[in-house]
Length: 67
Length: 215
Image (cartoon, rainbow over the protein chains, first blue to last red):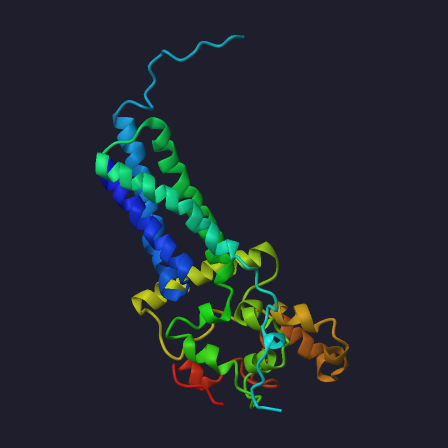
């Protein structure tokens, strides 16, 4: 899953670099309808992978309040 | 004097920065992100601190990229880069006075680099917002071919875009027709347009149907 997330983010960044080098209607369309969804999907996959690894679960071991 | 004089004085904007930071910054932020993501792609996992950078850097690059696209997409060349808009962008250079857009463009009455955006976006932050959201729909329609020729304005043209410059101009106020209360009411209620009856069409019909512009 991590590899898929990295691949999607790389696709998104490739689209961004192409748009930065040569911005026209075609590259702006790629940026909006390929790059942004790919980046959102990559970030979603990463968060899902971290959640499945137990990153966002309540363990009850949080540092107690000092007040 | 030649028909098309050239020189630095005729370039707008006159001074270009040595480095176009609007284009450079997203790339500069994206490059280390690419290196980290390639590392993650090969290894299949990343150390926690590096993983945070792999999450933050692409997001930051895209934030800067959005600023770049928002700003650079105001350019006339950008508008004319889609096939359906190319004849309209080319028609701006016509000097025969038959199109209101060309009259404004060739006489320098609007910023020539951002002529389309100047007239087709409203004033204030909501004007920019509505212009950009409409632009996203235009891109979608152009990409999927869901448009009909001749292309037409979606709704009525916002006369405030005209009045923003003309309302305070003495030459505009001096015209007898503009002082007519009935005409003022018709224009402000959008039942009448500046173009057609009194002023030339905004764009030549040939350009709206996807053909070449009259010169």
